[in-house]
Image (cartoon, rainbow, N blue to C red; front, side, top):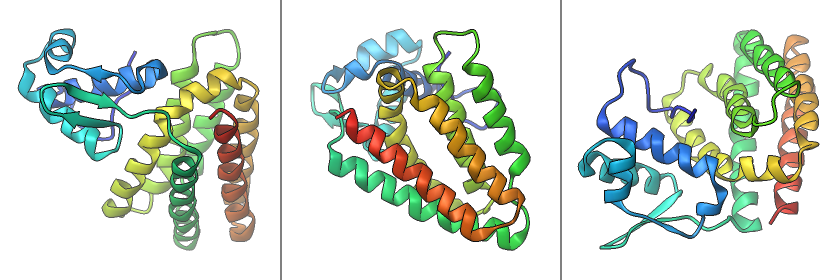
Length: 223
């Protein structure tokens, strides 16, 4: 089951949304696509849409840095990120998430129930099912997006979505190669929520920073 994009708000997808979600799902599902070409015609056939919405979806993905459109060739899937790109993405995320942490605590509306639910779902994913890599990363995304969307700042949401998408592009591969990272992520997420519940700004910001720095180290280890 492919992961839905932040662009999908309606119950019935448009052709562009369908193509976007199909392409995004493929990129998340198969890290081996990095450095290969995807043709409009083949994607249109596989996704069950015409080539026009596929072209629009590819433009959206190009704006997120996941593909590069090449005339008469199709979409070149971004190669595996360099350590520099990983560092830049995590630094951007840390800046936005620590800002969001301060804001929701100041407003006293931290989304702790939603974030705790994500943690509980991740814990359940560790039990019983083997093929949960994409689901685990999807829940991870929901955990962090809950904090960002609570700020009700659409510009920040768009900025964060780009950084988060580039992280998602490599997150599945990292989890597959470093399975013990799942347990660490759950522990780090719980530290963030516990600090938010305690309304301890310094501790919450430190927990966010420590989590993202640990994520950085785990991703760099895989490059």
